[in-house]
Image: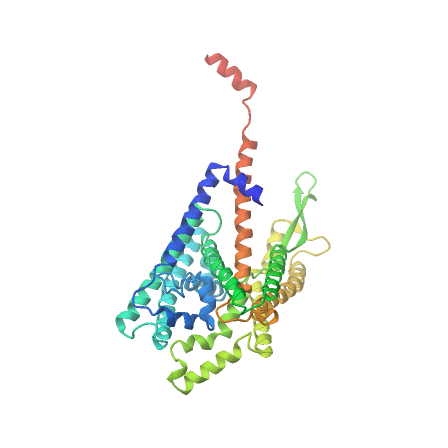
Length: 444
């Protein structure tokens, strides 16, 4: 991999794109350290260490803990994108819009941006209520409006920067923004881990156990992310002279084992921690309803009990199948294969092909669903297994790990594609023909 990066860096155009990516990362780090005014950071630190806000803080690279101008990171846009993907399948008008090509995708992207602004304002208002109840910010309309405007503007700035990364950098810009947000929280976690070891709060064997689990999780994520089931497809062409079908070659239809990616875990986390969202508006001290939300949130915490873990795993598996069904329409794939004269050996074209693909996809999705459920629970139970369950120490978990590894693989693939394009340019350059040489001689 290092050799490929060195070779890519030697290409001027790719080097320019990589430098632009590094500059964008630097801007993100600077913005994450610009705090809002009037914040009690000690009170915020206590709030972030518990529950859902801790996961948000990891995604933002510590920006939420510092209550910076980009404290919300891209979470409003991620949630809006997920909702739009589901609505595109459920609403016929949006589904028709998505099939109109580039213009339709631009309209859907525009709607997603507006939805991101709305969700950003709502989430910022919820954070204000939580911070105000915890004594982290003064209560008042001006403070609430300031937090809503500043944090929503920070999210839209990151969205614009992600679009610039997609256009002038390498890979998907939005994914790279999330990637750097997670990665910049690693140094703080490493320093905190060694500090706890020196203070004898955790043992060195526990840290080694966490490191081994982390490496095993990385290997598993890479294996499952790259894992595909290749369905052989025979491409047919019609010979006009004889009027019979002959084979023009064999290709493969790749079906990924983990088609849904990290989306099922995000959905499951959203539903599992749904009461905590309301708890931002009704704190524990507000009355019986606030206390009920607090107890319900504690019971539903996947790391709190076996039952909560089983419920969380069931939600992850359900959304894995659901999102895979949204992404893959086996009947549509079968119709396209039949339209272009392709078939799967041993399977009749049309409906039987759709049923065959559905059966294969259901079986391989089971492996992907079980893996996602396992990797999502490791982040909750690994600290207890290794004896490193210390407040304030949150290692990268299943969701973050899937994002980091997935974005790294996607970026390396994009770099290889850029290298391949430049190699192909050398292949298409042909030397002048003899007639061209003769013409140049006559002109001289």
